[in-house]
Length: 84
Image (cartoon, rainbow, N blue to C red; front, top):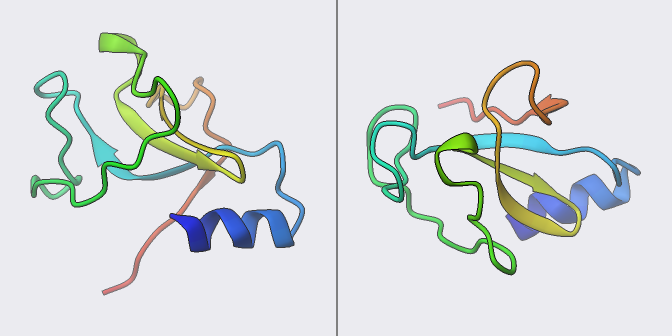
């Protein structure tokens, strides 16, 4: 996450929230990858996750890792994908 945050800072994406793989939509508080595997990262910023059942995806910006709304009409303006 720190590398993603640093890159976002370096390319001046300061007011962007990017969605990264992770959701607790199926079971509140149990974070899984989109493939259903346990999520290896738990470094949320501050009081996050704090959105309850309304914010079920993980977002990152240069300053924070937080739970965000998952829908297209939510806060997400960029997605980060990993090619395997």
